[in-house]
Image (cartoon, rainbow, N blue to C red; front, top):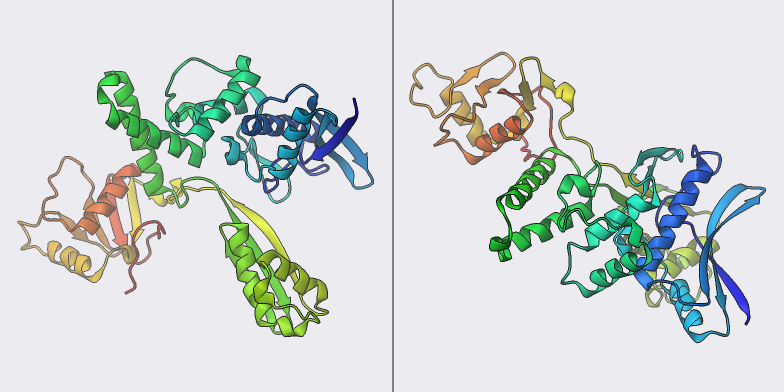
Length: 398
């Protein structure tokens, strides 16, 4: 038997991790996220065969303390070698590739902003619940089976379709939304299999998700890949939702000015990563950098925007000229038959959001704003030039 080893990062390649000297409880958090990464690898590639172990290893150097996963394997065992080869050739880039969500969300400083899954057990339970929403997908079902086999003690039998609020903590996640869509699809395909309680739970979670999409600027956390190029004429900034797209944008610049480096190759025959890397290695005066910005969702309306007496004050940019004309007509004393009672004030148009009223004849745009105001708990809506702008509502230039 010949024991060999490889080392793997403590988290998927494109994810943030705990930082020594910056993250409080570094050793504890780094150990937990390393254990969750190991679970994610097991979900993706199956339980380790005989002759393979995956252990968490701490190391100290002049730059600080760090953690890695150490994979030890019998180099003479074909099954062990094949398993480790998969780990080396197909590393995870994101947590969601194995059905997991980030266990910890970090600020730029390295501090923990939110503990999504503070234990290995909670992360595994959430992944099992998420993957269980897609029984028709063979790959996802296989990953769920791998987790059940490796972590039987962490699986709960409480519900085949756990409600949305039990799957994830705030903020709402993409995985939870996909799980909700699967539950809604199942309810439509086989309505007779649901009792009233299960049906009402699905409806309640759809209402919750609808409110989130209509009132939050982002429905769930997203990563934005950003980059910049310093050159003699200034700085170019780039942003994309994938690293591949970011590299493509930056490579276009490099190809345009490829003649400034001493490289006889045709840049249009090279892939984007190679073009960017080789261009800046050879250029004497230009530099570039890339980073990942983790954007957290925030409510479109902060509590402070809801004025005294539950009045929501929205900017008049949310109505187009035709809607503005309707509001002006409905404020006139002779407009007794108007579908909506509107008062013209010094700050703008003031109206009730009373849901018991019949709003027939109201333009869809105004009705949409009234519905939005009601979703925020407002009894009245005020529309004027000094109101707040909600960027996930329609906007018009006046």
